[in-house]
Length: 427
Image 1 (cartoon, helix red, strand yellow):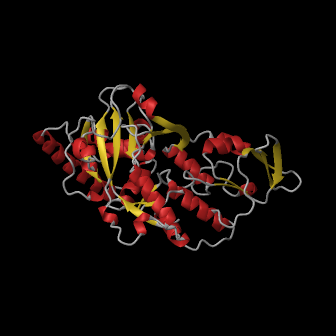
Image 2 (cartoon, rainbow, N blue to C red):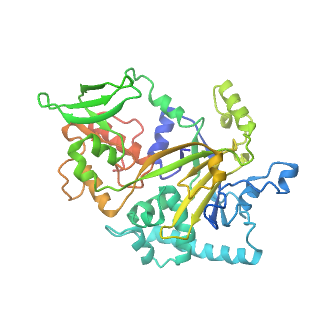
Image 3 (tube, rainbow, N blue to C red):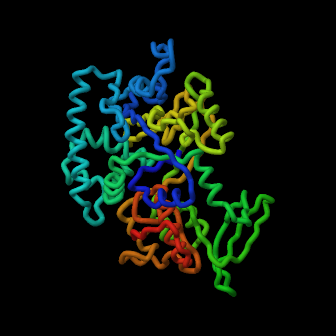
């Protein structure tokens, strides 16, 4: 799911509006939960089958969120619920104490993010120590939520530049979430309009400079299994740094110093083994109307039920990890950074994929800035040299998210002398 928060994704939002790509608001219930019994407890966000709510009608998102095993707090995005659901595992007195503790700590943390700016080369761990946040708030609230955004372990997140996370928190604070109507394929289709020479099922093997023309030559293996090569005027490597290092040997040494990690994402069948036909019918109607159900006359977007995302953390062991399980309206679930899967989950697994997440540290931040032509670090190459450019979510000074893809592409367009019609220059 590609969901963007207003404020932080400013350039992405402007691009969508310029291209006429419709988006609609979406609300979430974030369930913070403990992985009480690794390999045994299920990450499902569905209530137990014996739940009374199942006997008469479908449970509400609040009921589903409250029934998550090991849940210790439920947060409503943008505070769309004045009183979030109480986890079923907590008694009233214990829950009230938790709420008071959380209000005090979260208010202090938010105020610090706006007032106490990170110093140069400060990582997130040092920043949290400097603002005197209680350890329990850090381990049970700040790190689980932010590590699910960064799809990494808590230890890796603590090594991030503090400036990345503080900027993300302040810009997205109290901003609504949006998702593209009809999915990301709508964006891909719109961006591909007018491109005539499209080659799919091709694996790029390498990029080097042609000795005669000094232009980049690209080698790739096509769908026919044969290796081809062609000289291009310009080459843009919109890939992760580890792939760019393999493709473009000149950058192997410097890009090897930028850490990456492989992230697993799985699609799970509903716990009951059946798909909800509601979402399928709505999607079919939207296609028939050549539009989106959220923009059809008479549809109250604010009345749409919230979606439940369980942020489940395994506190035991040497490495503290968090997985996120997003229950989609169709009934299927998207599991990212899974903890040890039990046999029940493996049976429900419909599809599994992996993607590379670029991690951030103060050192890698300095390297990226140098590659973009900023800072004092000499890495021996800058973006655009040899008519080769790097682009992607990691090619900017900020969290490795979709906004970085847009900003890095806008910078390359500027190098090409192409005006970006939605641009409000911020760099």
